[in-house]
Image 1 (cartoon, rainbow, N blue to C red):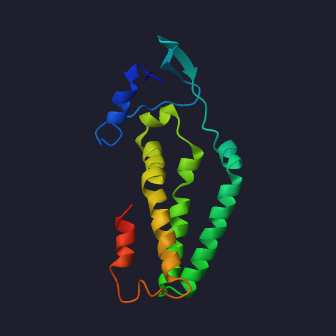
Image 2 (cartoon, rainbow, N blue to C red):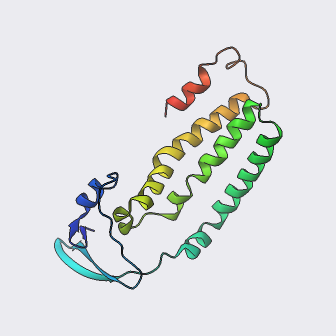
Image 3 (spheres, one colour):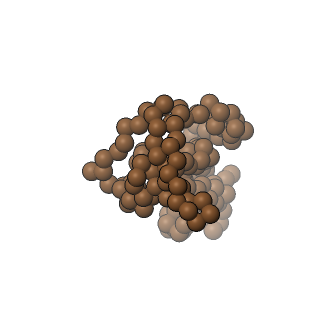
Length: 165
């Protein structure tokens, strides 16, 4: 993939985090030209846009969704019953972080580079939620069922877990 609608992928990528960038308002059924490189030759291909197959994508990751929803429910129950326990907070943060990776599981398409919202969701899942999962899981391990001796009296350890990734 070299270009979408005559604009290079680099140009689209540079505007992803710009609030002033103009975003295309394409709709399903509309044709957009994709510039591709095949065997060293650049070709322009007219692509008819279709609706995003959300149902099919969710069906493909149903197991991930089921485990994520179950974890969110358990974490919410534990948190609302015992919000003062460090383990309940760590479990809730782990569950929310795992849920934040769902956009990553749905994948990224070339057209997502033209839509800042889609890309930001993907970016959050990949570069924020995943590191947060590991920190929160380690946090949970250190404080469940009771805080380990390593963290008792050393309040700096848990914040350091979140600062390191």
